[in-house]
View 1: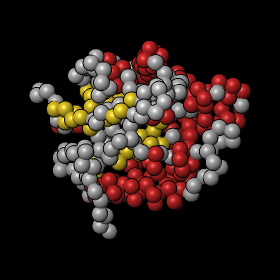
View 2 (view 1 turned 90 degrees about the vertical axis):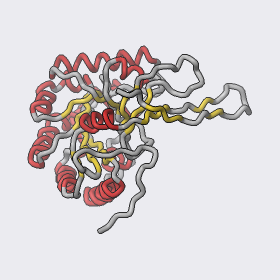
View 3 (view 1 turned 30 degrees about the vertical axis):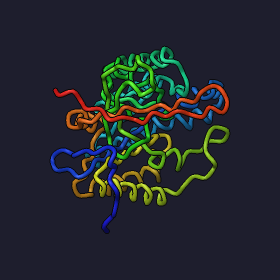
Length: 322
């Protein structure tokens, strides 16, 4: 079947080695951290804690076997608290040749926090991953995909290569650390790679449910999800962009969902010219081959009534020749 698709004209990219498109299978190993951050009293709920611990205890080993059988490497975003709670699981991920990336310390709520607080979360997560597995991640994904305007600079300060939290593209691009905020102090010339995500490619929206915590109570059939994700992969392949799937082991590591995930991996691998790899490799390629740098614009809303909002369009910059 021929899929007609429209490329992401805002983020042009050419893939290496005659590949036509790219795909990456990523896993957010939240375990108990996301529920504890949302409500610390959730630790009193034994059943809820068991629901979350299913991820590292049962699902991650299952998913690692799938990835090994399919001969691909995944990217695992791991909160520092998860690493400290399940060090053997994290080391097993590393030993399997997979990428370990940063996902906060306790999957903290990020919306509106100040830079100093966020820096503390980043540093604490880095310390935990270094202590447990001896890794210094180059990738970051904000909890709940909630990046702040000051986040890129904090990531650049710590040597991160890329972020995967924004939703404004189908292909990776280089993102300026400074924004177009109208502030004359925004003169930082550094950039990091952004690898966009999409809620339609997150298993949370399809399967997640726990009473009093999340979800509508409608848990989709893996057959329906497999069809939807296959269509998304086919479209990304046709338009030469980047298919990034986000899974949570305590969700997609369950039996029928894991079977459907492996079927999806087989389908994606079979697409002619599809580069199935880690986000780190995709980011490295983007950093070295893409010259345009996107500087995001901020919408400023005055504090007094009736004034409306001001918007300064985003700009494209040119990378400094190496």
